[in-house]
Image (cartoon, rainbow, N blue to C red):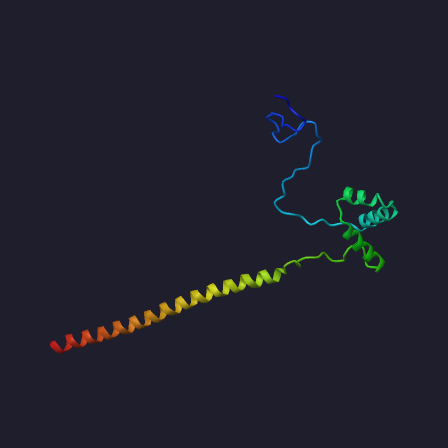
Length: 149
């Protein structure tokens, strides 16, 4: 049996490695994609290199940096409009206000305490009715014992 350069090597270390080729990037998709962010200096450097490149070399710059031409267009428009190269505030969901967490905690505690208060009032009400019932029974028992003597 002849082995070609594409046959897999029977090594225990890495069964996925192919002979005769340079190491390839892992084809597996990462579990969670991460958004890339670019500094203002990086954007300016890439724009300068892209604009200085010959027409056939522009694609090589994009491939080397892992960028799309639409990003270059967007960065160029922002630069020409006089916008700062990077936003002053980070985009995305704003940080949670710690007061909101405290308010939620206090509301939960209040609801729990109101429930305990309702139970205590119910118990006090039952105890007062039980006391009234026992007094009524006691008065009836006293009147029965007093009339039979």
